Amino acid sequence: MSLSVPRMFDTGPWGPVFGAAYLVVVLVHTVGFLGTSGRQGITRIGPLNLCGALVVLAAGAEPGTLRMWLLAESRTPAGVATAG
Image 1 (cartoon, rainbow, N blue to C red):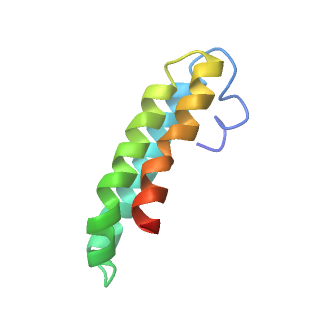
Image 2 (cartoon, rainbow, N blue to C red; image 1 turned 120 degrees about the vertical axis):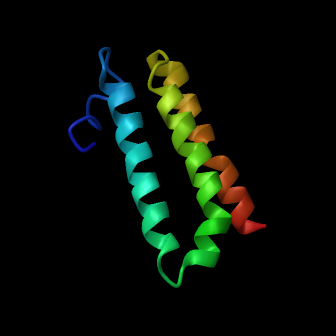
């Protein structure tokens, strides 16, 4: 994931690589928290994080400008849901 960050907005496979790596990180954290005392919180926010990670993955396949807007929008639902 760290290797794809500087190249994410360039042409090539780096957008989907970043999206797939981010999805793996979200899944690992979600599964990890399910086995701890944070189970109640992660069952509430986990699905929103998963949706955001899927949008990031989809954004990786788009051209640079659209990719930036999709990435910005991917974090909006989780922020709104936890603030409200």
